[in-house]
Length: 119
Image 1 (tube, rainbow, N blue to C red):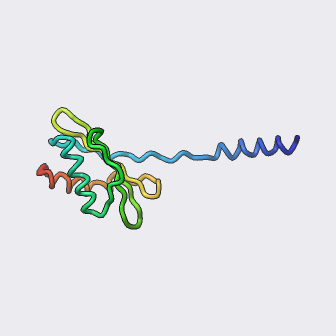
Image 2: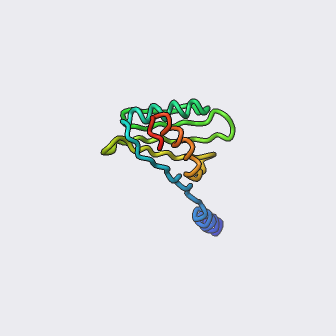
Image 3: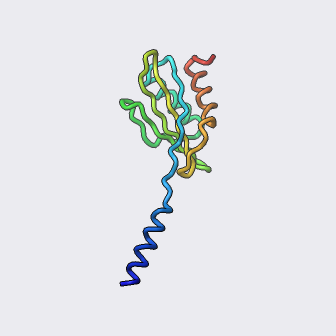
């Protein structure tokens, strides 16, 4: 009986040590283009950079891409309708860990250039 009690206490203590993974912080940008076009251009850009589109749904405005080579980055794309176009949201992870959102700035800058919306 004592063994079961000690085991239960040990499992309770170890259960408290579990850490939930941090959610990636998104990098967002408003674009004066329809959400479907923004999503298509974003996927084309990611494919040009070596990403493989793993999942995509144009009706929902979502896509997920994974880098086909090491170090295995993943980018989630969401394009939602906004008053004057679309709001693009990108999040990136590597090995399940979130990456700083500023690393996505070159992707956003290139996307603006491709859409003809660069400042």
